[in-house]
Image (cartoon, rainbow, N blue to C red; front, side, top):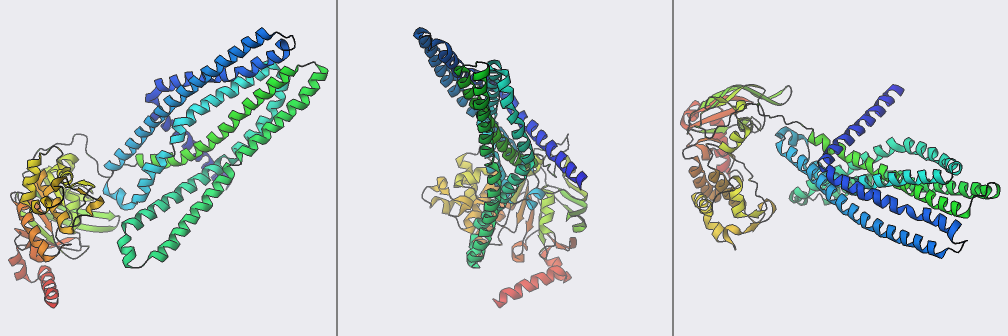
Length: 593
């Protein structure tokens, strides 16, 4: 048990050091700004500590001797020191904040860039709420560390050291006696270190859970209200919130204990000064000015200690957040390019699957020994029962996931030897629920081709029958749509998405149940858009409504991860196999309605 604890303790220490080093790398590009800040800080520290030293001579030498000219000179020097101190502190704060925000921007940019490169497997296992918490909250928790924390800790360390040196110069014996209180504070500090870190990590985890739950509730609000789940959700929300409350209070209680601890030690040190100082006045003739200056410097010594203890707590909070940030930054994408990947400007459209196997989880195959070939310009419909592996085939073709075994080729190129940019640019994907971004309709259509001209946008919108409803909106193509396109109907969203794909002009087109969520009238409109999209390009069409794929060149029937049948509609109907059964069941269902 002891060995296990020591190992965990060692690992926690190593992680902390490594995190500090990594955070330090983000500060490295700003060495000049940090150097300027430290310079201003040093000047501010020296001028800030000059007052008690001058006060000592005023009390002991000049005021008793009525040397008022010297008092005026000292007052002038002190006034100049205050002005310089004010200016340097202002400069220090301004540069430190600018530098800190620049560092945070770099961290958030790296984190966002990493998230955009991660594979679909990562998003399958990671909630959106956790990612949002990390990109926003966790990075924000580093704000105090980089804007004020680092500069203040250097300032406080400087003030502590300079104050200690001056105290030793004034009276070594008295200084050493008061410093005996420092070990007491350090022992308590290091005893509480890991406990505090664990508490703040617990708070961060529970905050992440709350954010994930809130995000889930907002996205699924229609389902929540439809199933009258408000009361149960409120109870769960209260339970999650109470967990955060109790975790936060446990962390805060131990966190706020540092202030009183430092104050106690400071009072203890002052008591020593007054007791021992009074003794020295009687025995060794120490002056009143020395005692007063010493008392002020002792306060200047313990103020930084208090701040440093708070910084340590701040550092522990930052470490808990940076741990999550670096966890995501260190995440490696499952789908990667080979070093010498080939960029292919255009596909002819020949697609070949050779003995393809795939599993989302080990020992749970989704596709087994799938082999087929598609000629350029051919339209292949993919049908089959739910969960048979239809969508998996297109996910593998676009390399959203990598195959477990076998080969997939496009125009005789193994897709693993082609750059991901080539695959994503030359393969257009239309999903059952198209995603519409906040912004204008024009922006959404141009999403895949940002440099397109408005004439091109209008042309593709007309081609997919979207132009008519767009021009009827209040600002036409510049009409702003809400998040996820809530102002548009399902059919309108599909038409905008069709226009977006057509504008990009892909060589291979994938339609994944693109009309499954619309009514029959809208489907007829969309079918015209689909016919336009299919012209002159290799196409894969996944559909539950078998009536929409009767004119496909070939229909591939998938069952339990294998190709059960392949042929035209008439050929498959004549075979009276799985396709025939699916077709008959669907039409009997429609007749019953």
